[in-house]
Amino acid sequence: MTRRQAQNVAGIAPATFARLTRDGSILERVAHGVYHLIGAPLPDHLDLRAAWLQLAPETPAWDRRPDQGVVSHRSAAALYGFGHLPADGHHFTLPRRRQSRRSDVRLHRRHLDERERIDLRGLPVTRPSRTASDLLYDREDPEAVAHLIADAIRSRYDYPGTFADALARHAARFGLRWGDGLALLRWLLDLVGDPQTSRWVDEARPQLNWKRPEQAGSDEVAQ
Image (cartoon, rainbow, N blue to C red; front, side):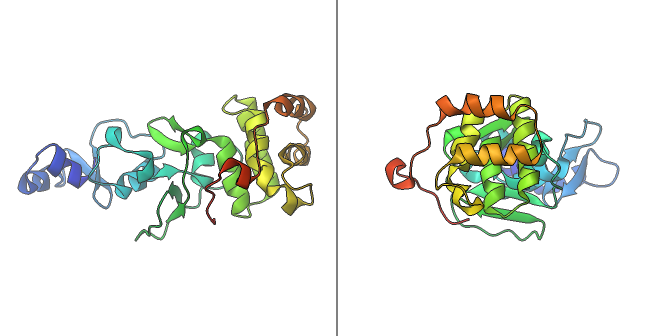
């Protein structure tokens, strides 16, 4: 919980909250303004969860809206457990430009529609296909992105066709025909020598929905 939630939602007076957070009491501080009930199991990715709560400290986790922050980029990959990119900070995507006082928090501005995010263990997170595209926008190592893609498809968290659609706008940067996400999907999977590449490319072909931005009314923003 956050201090603001305890005071504004639960109605705990500041003096009472101070007593609850003293040494030997029932709440321990895990980040600025964020507390954990002593004796309760620690959740996975505790630092990431605390950073997410800090983005909207007045709103309980169960009432949070996607526009208050979605886990993305390297943080999303780490939450899924896909690929091997180190989670060197906490990455979130929001629809509006915003800054954080924390040096280990990076906020990205982009509108995400419902198809590009899911709820994973209580946190809103970008879908693996959106995560892969975001990582390529960030100029991450293509082979590292390819490992994430293979892990996600193999684990059935996302589909080959959805990846091909998300990768389409990156194809030209890798010397492929503009908008050819299917070719980029094959190229990336070949980088890691995945034995299922041909089957996944065949699966992706009838699933393609990608259109040029001007055809789809895209609201992409600079990353």
